[in-house]
Image (spheres, rainbow, N blue to C red):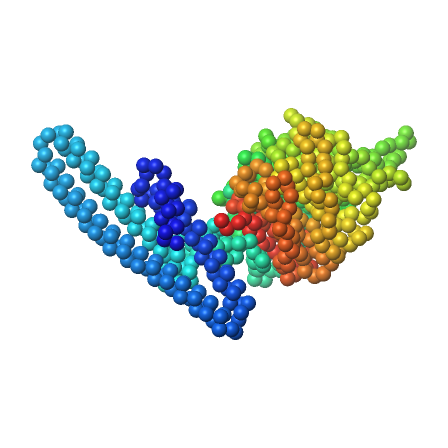
Length: 592
């Protein structure tokens, strides 16, 4: 390690810069993660050998070798710290002596030019002393980190003397400073990996003398920074709508008190999103489960002071019984997708059967209390439509998935349909060639779409007639607005599921993560009491690889919603069979 570390630091050191600050940067950013990776890999290999040959003399030899090498590294680290401390004492003594000598010379100097040069020498001497002190702190940080990563139980007095791994934080406890993985990752605080078993938390803290709320129609949304909001329908409060804001911390969410947004009316299927640039939020809901009126309103929220202001709601559709899909677009606008029912009237005043369309509404949201401004409305398909889902492919383009029911025999089925939409000024332009996956199938129900990269998105859906969950990869040509199938639908789960939720770290507007770190997490049921998730890597071109199936929760779910918080973790909220709300973080990024 010592030889490799020296060569690495020399190779990485910028020409002409050899001070302690640069050394500290290289140690922390380049050398230390590699050392920790080597330690972790070495421990994993030794552990696998010990398991495979447990009970044999060779197994005991390997285990003893592991302990011997661990003690050797920690002992060498301790000696390095002792040498550094001795050198620091000698260095500080030299610099203080030099400082006194220069001060004496300044007092006796008569020539102003000589005094200026001596003062410059004093500044250089002080800079060298501080660099020596920084070098000692860096060395002590490296030693403490190495020893604790190797399993040392010696106390570390301060978090300044520890460098935790990616997706980890330091906490000062009675036993000293320690590194811990953030909620949503698991490991030793130095190597933190995506979890095999995420930790589940209750959304509402139990209150003395009060029953826990029973909740339905959850919708999570990420706000700027580490902000998060969840909108829901409270069954125990006459189905009225509430919103809770909070901040995602390293160990759990810090939720504020719920705020009523629907006044005295019910609020079914609420959808909440933050406007671009954090200017406010948009909220849509319907006031009845069937035959309801749909409303859109804006609002503002101060995360620091927990102050919420709602604007005037505006009616945008009637006779609603389906959930909406909504996305935010630039300039405080939102695009809403819903099922539109247009009623006809006969000459005698009688009402005729309604015509049904899949429709979109582009609206500007005002955050000063005014009602939203409706800019344009388009139909993207005709006939009965249900099960809407939308995925942002860029800040101004998105894929819309829906179920189109056939009205007449001989018409091609569109149970797993999708179309491409693009924003142009104040209008939404839709592709003229919607794509239908498996046009021969009937009864395709729950679905979810999630962005990948290079114009591709994952389309996951449940085939009710086959009782299986399938996933396809679709790619969009942004020039022709045509879609093509990159990966044909394949079965990823068997058994009935009433819900599907997919979340990707490939969020187009973030740009924080490299392609090697992109992940796709898909949650669904397999007909049993416990849900299932699929965890995949996303590679160039939107292709999935290295998919793994994970059992991640112990209770039955009835609904689920997810979002990505500012640090890259995914946050999911879900209701169990008793309509009690839980939430959990899922880390999706690599530790290196």
